[in-house]
Amino acid sequence: MAFRFLFSRTDRDQGMEEEDGGGAFEDANGGTTPLSAVAEAFEELSRTVGKVNINGCSDDCLLLKPFCDACSLVSVLFGCLGIAFKFAEYEYCSKVRDLVEASKIYGTLNNILDVDVKNDTVKTHGSLSRNLRRVRQGLDLIRALFKNFLSSEYCTLKEAASTAYTETCAPYHTWAVRTAVSTGMYALPTREQLLLKLNETDESAEKEMRRYIEASLPIIEYIDKLYVRRNISLDW
Image (cartoon, rainbow, N blue to C red):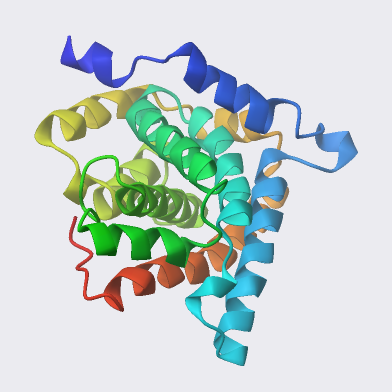
């Protein structure tokens, strides 16, 4: 029963995927794919963070809405990975939705942390700061998966995904979730099947994955610094 609950899909979750990823991407002949759209969005965010570092701007420089727009595109990638990542997909998509709603009220990532720090609700279940932390972990999971996928050290997608999950999300999940994910790893698509789902070739996938790997790291580090500067640990 617990396993079925973890990987159940709601119409709302499916709707988010259709809204955020279904019609937004052209086929290979059109030149736009889920991977290229994600890479482009995070390169734009990365340039924003770069301006923060160069110009010495405050944390307010990274706006919440474009961050949410970029993160929403990543949900399509989770959907291509099958049952093994259904819990990660469900958690990620629900947290992104909450941040999207928050972007109607708060302008920046900095704002939502300030509010939770003031109310002492940073680590409270359902708080925006906690949601941001979980979204950050989802971004890091995809980044680690792409790195492993492109590495000659891993022969199968299962090996690449298992290592990525162990490094990024497993430390923060319960035993039940870790067990369910481990079981679901056997249902992952093959490398060839994943490329087909992403509408990519080996060459184009490597190019777009490397773009995301490079562009997402400054965003992940930026988010971490928002917590560290407020003396909030990252071990949760």
